[in-house]
Length: 150
Image (cartoon, rainbow, N blue to C red; front, side):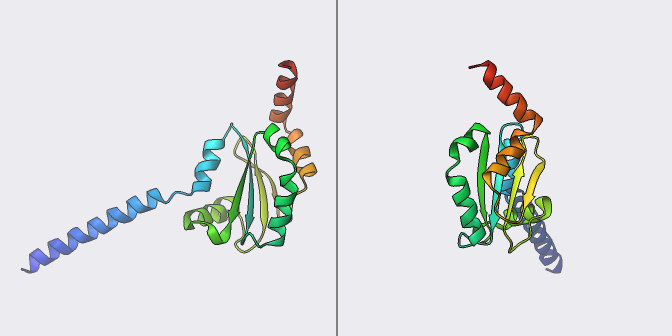
């Protein structure tokens, strides 16, 4: 009887371990997946805030709202990363991989190469955002190609 209990208990431990591994694999950050999928395709602007009630978040959204054509022209995707709505995997990814501080506002520009080009803790003016992007060699090539095709 003791051996049977030990075998059953051992079996349950294995099953629990496999379940945890499977759950962890499924819990990959949605933001991480988006960043990886966007590599070489688009620039990503992550707007991180504790909630949509953050004054800095609201200001950043207002700055971006009038610039949809400029964002589209530069192949940009804006991700609103609101801490109070994020999954644990997203919070972990942002904290551990992009060095975002929980509880604070941050705006990050991730280039098409996947690297962080701008990291700021105050709202980012679109003029500064676009100037940074337009100064990048990849963007310069895009603008030249667009001119040739017109």
